Length: 393
Ligand SMILES: Cc1ncc(COP(=O)(O)O)c(C=O)c1O
Image (cartoon, rainbow, N blue to C red):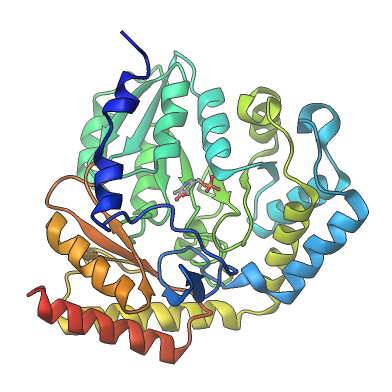
């Protein structure tokens, strides 16, 4: 048997390309802004996670440029050995303070943060408990651990409690959830998660990839939104969304972070976050605190779009954040809607099985503080026209 047989047999992507229905890997030839250039065409971007619009903020760009001038382009080594810069430690101190935690640790990607944190905490004597809709990086972190993994129904606290009741009291336990779910756009029921965690002696880890810079009065995320910063044992975040770069952070008690620092293989055996990104993230955190109007604008835009889609008759599921899925429920119709949007200057993401179960096909949209009223009007207009043509509304 040739190990490559599956590759030569894999035809779906090529067929979709030939049919002009391939929605992935479209190259942008412009910055990641509310309007981007794809295939020479201007398009309104409603598929990225640039919630605060900071990818081109002058202070963020300038910080990155200055860092390159001083430190060069790369760290060429792991944080563990030669890769730690004073900037990394400063960023960790800033993030710990921002997140109201004792300590924080920065990783080179959000994916690596989950892989490293979850796999080093979960030993064979522990149980990891996840929501069915948790991000793939959480699932992979669990797979890399030696722990037993158990899943509960999405955001269903009865399902979680039933599960917790049946678990061995002597095992260490951690409940791991997304703060905002990246496809559904709903918020984890953190008050109940914390309550059940206390009742059944389980720690709680919140992946706030989409919550940081979005939820809470100061954009500190899901825990701030619910006033549960102290009760949430570990907070994880990525820099690839509101913070306009790439990288990740985990924040919690000093001892826990210190342990992760010495056992998380995805940090120890991978090179450190480059200077430009470290500086960009640090500047993004400052901008978020200095320009609270960005958060106000983000929520203005999100509320406007949610209302607009719902009034038109679209099913937006349980969404209540700047991530708004339009539940289409058919592969053909979702592709047809996506094609209409592409042809009329709107770039959104179709989400098909196996990423979601059959019948839950959707167009995922996400909005930013940087979108203008005119851009949002145009998006709604295109959804209205296509929705009527396709019998969706
Ligand atoms: C919920 C969640 N966690 C983790 C990640 C991984 O983050 P990164 O893109 O920084 O690797 C993502 C990114 O898609 C995410 O949505």
